[in-house]
Structures are given as structure tokens and as C-alpha cells.
Image 1 (tube, rainbow, N blue to C red):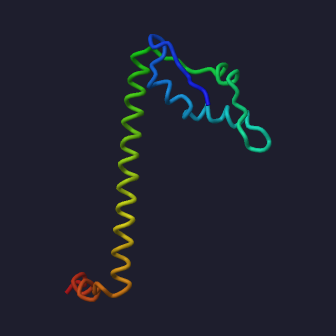
Image 2 (image 1 turned 90 degrees about the vertical axis):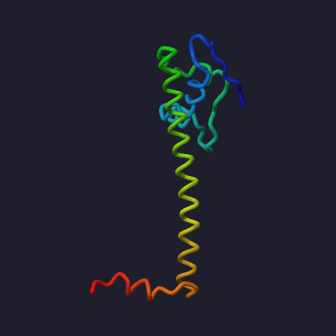
Image 3 (image 1 turned 180 degrees about the vertical axis):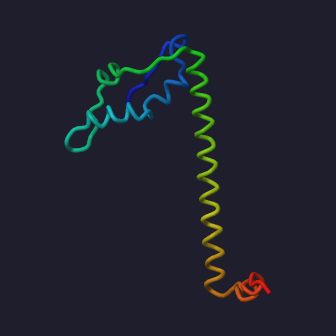
Amino acid sequence: MAQIRSERDVVAPEFLSWGPRDHRVQLQIELDTQGIGVPDLGLDKIGSMPIVVPPLREQQEIARRTTAQQDVIARNRALLIKLNSLKSGVMDDLLTGRVRVTPLASDTVPT
């Protein structure tokens, strides 16, 4: 475990927190993984990893937008779980006969 700090006037902490999730960083970690699947991430390697440092205002905007997108993803995942649960309940009701399908089917047939 390592604590990574930045100079706040150079790198916004909220921007830095997204750094390890970047696909390029993940690729670098994979390249440094030992044969047994254990990442070899010593403090020397963490400290020497290059990061892109755009202007501070841009970092803050990137972090704000990325966080907003993650919030949308989290809400959609929660909704998906809820809808899958509802679907399972409806399927169970229909398949066990608790809810009759015949009247519903006759309503959809054009006359």
C-alpha cells in the first residue's frame, strides 16, 4: 500500500485519483506483473511512472466529467439489477401460472 500525494498547485488530487484506472497505467502494471500473476509495484516503480499533467483547470474538469460519468454508470447498474429482479419475478409469476397469459394474448390478436 502506498499513499500518493501531489502538489495541489500542479496536480489536482481528484485528477490524480483517476490515474491508476487509466488503461495505459493498467497496461504498465500488467507488463510489470511477475510470472505468478503478482504485480511487482514497489514504491520506486510507482514513483517513476509517467503521468500526463494537463493544466490544472483542465485536470479539474476531466475529474468532474469522469466522476459524473461514473455516477451515471453506477445508477444504470443499480437500475439494471432492479429490472433484472423485476423480470425474474414476472417470469416466475407467468411460468408458475399465478398470472394468466391467455387474456393478454387475446388482446394482442388483431380482429
